Length: 224
Image 1 (cartoon, rainbow, N blue to C red):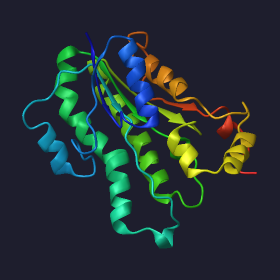
Image 2: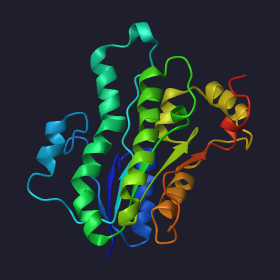
Image 3: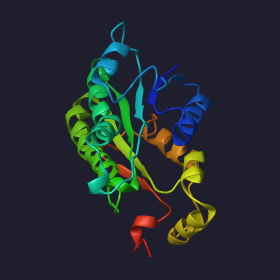
């Protein structure tokens, strides 16, 4: 039985990823934010102090967002966004690397965002953190390729999750949908299936890539 370690496994996309891997008979390790506080380096080190699980796949799905313009962002929120969304994956990759090298193979995947390739007003901290993931993924892909470890990311657009419904009115969602060429929000399971493929034995040659899953949103002129 193979093992998946996933952060953010209790969120909308994260839950779908867990379910997809469970259906493929993976053992799932999915710590809550109380068990593993990704904003604190000491929490990460403490969580793994007793032992490091033997895993085949590491998925970083955790993420936070404080949408504010530059003049309203406080330093604590800024630093926490970068820590949870990007920096924590650096530490996790370091921790799990000996395990994956010993297997001479495995997968690391980050759940990115379309705001990792474009941006909009009020997304400074979030976009910066997600764009940092691109550099992390590409560099890890190069460094870990000799050990047959594939490193990729997926960049969802607008996904139909509880959080999306909570943060947007019905009218706002209708406006978003009008800007998506495929005419709807993504389903969480559609993101999860792409994640599974990139982390499965069927993927032997894709590494260093950021797969955009946005219904065509970023292919054209958006925001009108």
